[in-house]
Image (cartoon, rainbow, N blue to C red; front, side, top):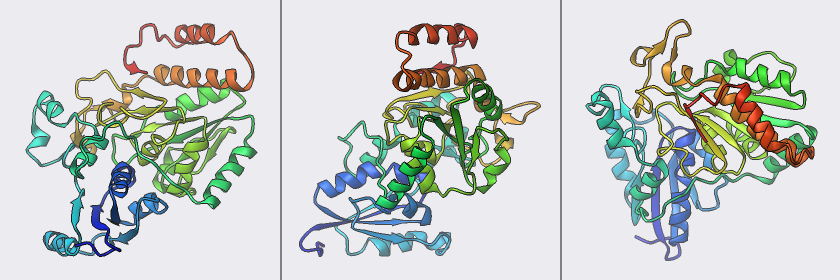
Length: 358
C-alpha cells in the first residue's frame, strides 16, 4: 500500500558488512528516482555507511542476533507487511556470488565456480532490486558538513605531502597483504615528502609498523573517518575491504589487491583503480574462507597464496606511478614522467612481471 502522501513504499533489507552496504547505494538512488519512499533495514555497521544518504527516508536498525536463526524468515515476512515492495538483499553477495564453506558450490571445480560467480556485485545488486538495466555504477557516499570540514582540515595540515591511506585488512584471513610493511618502508625511505595513514579496526594494530612517516590510526579512526579520508588522500591501497569499496566511490587513485573476487566482481567500475592479483590458479576463488585451514598457504609466513604471491615490486611500481603524476601536478617536473616510469619499470624488474593489471 502507498501511505506516504501517496508515494510508493519500499523496504530494502541489507544485513552485511561495510562494503556490502556501499554496494546498495546505486539501488537506493534508483528507487528514490523511481518515486519510492525508501525505508532501509540495516545493522549498526550498515547505518554507519548510509546515515547521510539523501535517497533514504527512514533507517530501521536491526540489532544483530536479536532474532534466532529459525525465526528470521518469519521476522522478514512481518517486516514486509505494509510496503508496496520488499527487497531482501541479505546474503545477495556473500551467498549469491561467493560460496560459503560447507555448501555444494564451495566444492565445485574452480572453472565451474568461476563461470557461476564471476558477475559484478553492483550489477547484481541492482538486478535483484528490479533495476537490472542500470549498469556501470560504483556506489556513492555522503558526509556531514562537520565530517567534511574535519577531513579538509587534516588535508590542509598535511599540505605538500603525498598522502597515502593504507587499509590493512578485511574481514577474513585472506584479506591482508603480508609485505605491506616492507613495501611501505621502501617507498617512504625513498620519498621524504610521502606519508602513510594506516587504518583498520583495533585488531589491525598488530599489522602496523613503526616509521616516522607513518601515522597509525587502526582502532582510533572510526569507519566514517577512514572512508572520508579516501576522498582526500592522494592514493588508497589495500585488499578487499569496506574502505576500498568506499574509495571506489571517488576519483582518488587506488590500488586493490584482490583475493576471492575478480576485477569483474568488484572493481570493474571504480575510477582511477589499478588491480593486483596473484598469478595462481585458485584466484579468484569466489569462496568465503573463515579459517586458514581452507586456503592454500605460503609456507613460512602462513599467508594465503592469493596475497603472498603478489610481488612487492608490482605494488611499488604502481605506487611510484601515482606518485610521479602527483609530482608532475604539484612540483612541476613536466617532461620527465615518461622516462621516470620507464626507469621504475627497470628498477623493479617489471619488464618480467606479468601478475599485475592496470
